[in-house]
Image 1 (tube, rainbow, N blue to C red):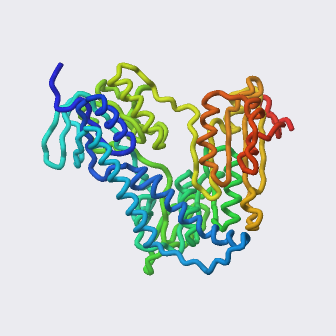
Image 2 (spheres, rainbow, N blue to C red):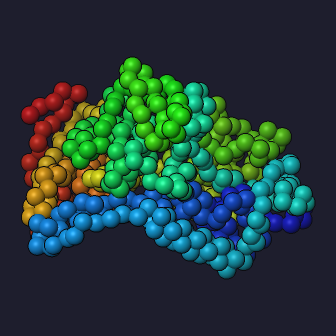
Image 3 (cartoon, rainbow, N blue to C red):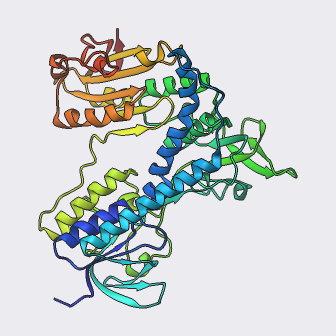
Length: 463
């Protein structure tokens, strides 16, 4: 066997790459991790973590309003954007330091540089031009927001990357897109007092989610004051003399806003990695093509996370990293399990979901039972807030297995995480029915819906 500088060379210091490096190094492997920007990747630096901090910040406007109904005399609140940015930056710096220390503590080597493939066993370190030899290569470079170069005037737009670093909070913003990133940021900006418009080409926001969740969230957001324009896209963005933007829409309207945020998909970070020279196959979108074990067509080169465009979620990248180590270094071929992944949309109200939405379940099973409850949670009673909660279970009528669970309301993401365990274990609706409720909670509704709201047999609804 040839002697290499490293047993494993990881390109990308995000959650997936760092996890693979740490676990492999703990096995005694010689590991290096190359990262050209900051450790933590999209999730920690410019994704889920700062976004969730912004979500928390944006919720306080409603918290102050609700406190009055509970007896609190709340003086007029004032929000300071720069304070939020500074606090967020301190937390991200702290988390990045933890990532770096964890890598170093595992025994892996950190290389603060861009890395490019020279051949299947050689990597160039761009910072100093030297090359190192490696046995196994793992690409975990993630993705980035699509700039949509086809949009005329796209250079005047921002993406989620820039949204975390705006010098001033805009008075008005238009968000283009209808996926979870667009929906979350529309709610964030609205909660911070920004006049917000969401424009989406589809019939309804959050494509692929359960239709009840989509419709109910749309209604809730509209009631809060977020304007949602469906069946329309931006065709041109023009910078005015006063610095504001005229956004020309496909429906014939022109809206004037301070900022336009593009949130219409993400692109894998594969350019300039040397993939073509080595012969690594990529898809038409630039994503790295891998088999069920995260191996590329070059047998010592692997890829995990968003750069493969399979499931763009941080926990998925971490799971793929663990499976990679099992396969590559423990002689235990393990394919990532992408079935029944619980997920959340940190909208306002929040969404948590796991398993099949109704429109997919009716295609997968001859007959399904749908258990649905919509109610005002207790926390909204004294506050006078009219916002409702939605809970929905989807059951295969033949096996009685719960194949989908969908929640909209406070702490929906937390509930989805816990529901992911029993659904993964294959529990039945009878198991739910036998479970005692915790009272008074919103979650108790999940185990007290004893009769189906309706059935769907061979695609036909039966009430």
